[in-house]
Image (cartoon, rainbow, N blue to C red):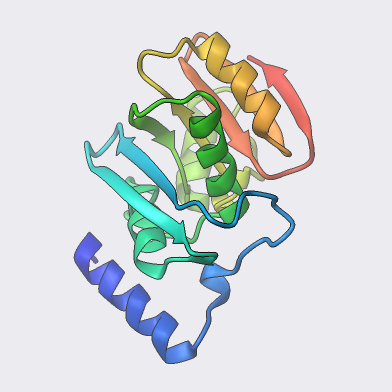
Length: 183
């Protein structure tokens, strides 16, 4: 399924069902209700880029979310999954805190269980029960911003896990319990 087909399918499904848990909001996240939330992303593995508004006028937007979900798909297995909305909101908050208009470079978003197992066999530090497999984690960096500074901003804006991987050049963000680490 290509991006256009996925967006059309997601839009149709959400309209047909009236609402969908695929796009369910975490109402406990406190963000101003009058601003639009957008993410400017580049998938480092596929080269795809989007600048997508996913929330506006107090509501999550199906088309914007579908674009983000597609970009954050498991590119190895070509599988798309819903990403945790709290995760997207935290990423948006980090972008706002840093006052950057730079693209956020996505290193890893959703991972299928098969991809996660393959990565575990070939790389150290890949969790057996990774939040990536639940759409609750992503790895990223922002060009022009040092990873040390990005790590501090992420710690200040995240309610879940934050990992700093200085040798690999990315920050991990997830919506699990509050914790941090450096590898």
